[in-house]
Length: 114
Image 1 (cartoon, rainbow, N blue to C red):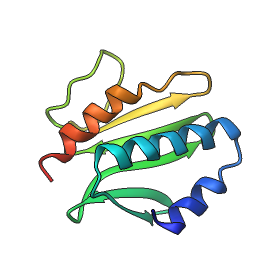
Image 2: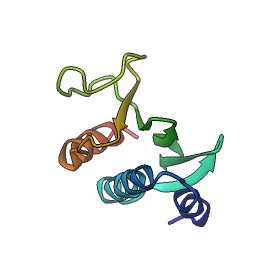
Image 3: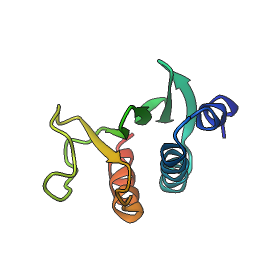
Image 4: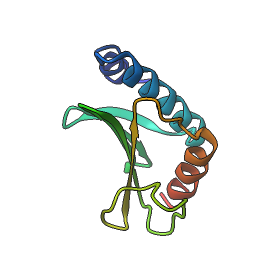
């Protein structure tokens, strides 16, 4: 675990966002065992073999997780935000459940090609 990413997590002011980010970080680490973490552009980035696998961040009303190498990923309608096919973003708002199993499957699938 990268200390700068841990510090980022500890610095999140909204408790629910901190909880969601910590949980997603754990899902990423379990799904991509060889993942490397670093802070870049002020946000935690997760890499596999030097290529971006995911980026995690917070905004005023949500936590966002962007998965890279995501062109072939399939998820329920409305799960991903509109955007380019090679990057897919999930926004989690306060009170929404995080589907750990779905995120783990998507992260494994996307990172397999890295």
